[in-house]
Length: 140
Image (cartoon, rainbow, N blue to C red; front, side, top):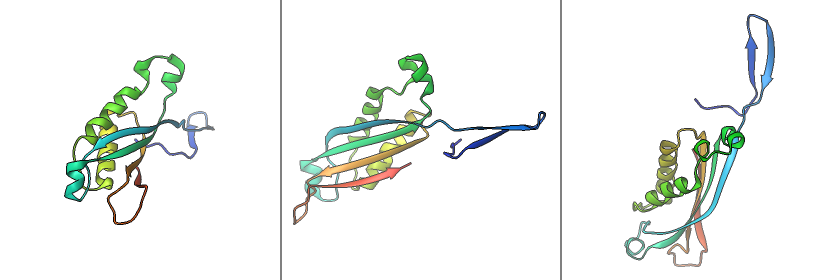
């Protein structure tokens, strides 16, 4: 069930009194993950490859890990990286499609996630002119 960032009103009907509680939203940021992969529309991109960067913001309630100091209660960074790495190995034509695949794989692998924000960047895309990078940002 998706949580709202707004206040949730909890009412005890029998006692007829209400209290307000804020939904806890924690954010795990993983930035600068670098991959060399073979994504793109042009045949050259599929042969030569390119450098890609992935930045993630993962939203959820991480209070159990905050209190327990136990990796079993946390989202393991190495496991997140492995999911992204495996997804990056499957060639796609569009950055949009690749970013969607990464989000889907993360949400399937870590059901405690509420949302994932991804910034996927392709360095030096093949164009006639000069361009440092092209990026897509998705929130799922």
